[in-house]
Image (cartoon, rainbow, N blue to C red; front, side, top):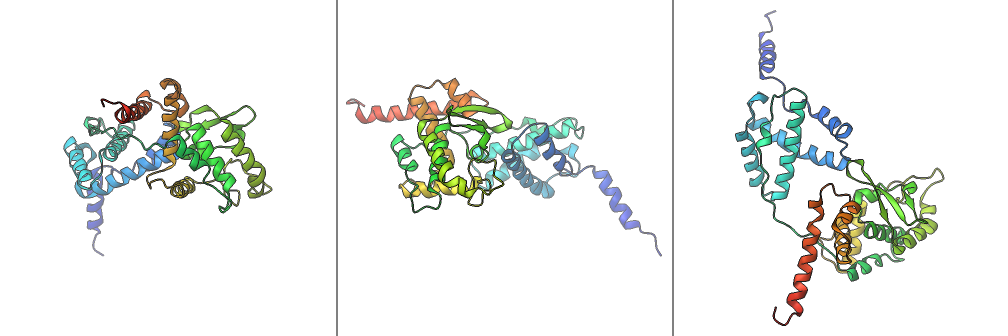
Length: 315
């Protein structure tokens, strides 16, 4: 039998090429969760961005990681722009790539990361969609007897507007984290950071009605740790929250761009309009940076500007 030379050549070629870009990906995901404390949603977003980069890299990248340079990353950004991604999406992809290559440096795979030289595209200040207080009241009153679980849905909407919580934070709300008698709840946000948020009388009343008349029927005997549950007592998902808000927003005549985050934006804008301090709002919303919270000052300024133009005789 002739010697098997061809497979040997293949192994040598692969060894010469060095480690592949993707082989550290599983360890990287564990690193994000265990050491960086990132939430499942953030990890999923990073993972999705990197998988797209890996797919492009297979056809366009060098065989050796040490030869990855800024020119390669620039070509990939051109690829993303060619796909019609907006500046915020491109910026998120850049962050995902940077964090992965920092991990490769941390693991000793690379001596340095050329991705650090990438700069994010300039982001335009897109003001978030905000509902008026009147529209919020209509939305909270939208669930009716024709709906399957109107008390649950009304309690969910009231809690989201009362606290400014994200959809993922609300679906992850546990019973033991809600103190109706004291009028507050404990919210677990990004990076597993916990914060205390006050509840208003509307939210407290809505949750009490839901707990008494619907949740006691939905939850089986073994019980459930989650505040908001499905008909079988399981944890409510973010997709279900999304669909519920879309349904009730359409019912009151709102545009299709209303989402769970719209209630969070509305809460923050109305708080500022009522005289809340920006630093206090940052803490309530769970923002790591004050810069994230400051966008709501622009929303309020835009509202005041439109009112001035509408009613001032010389505007």
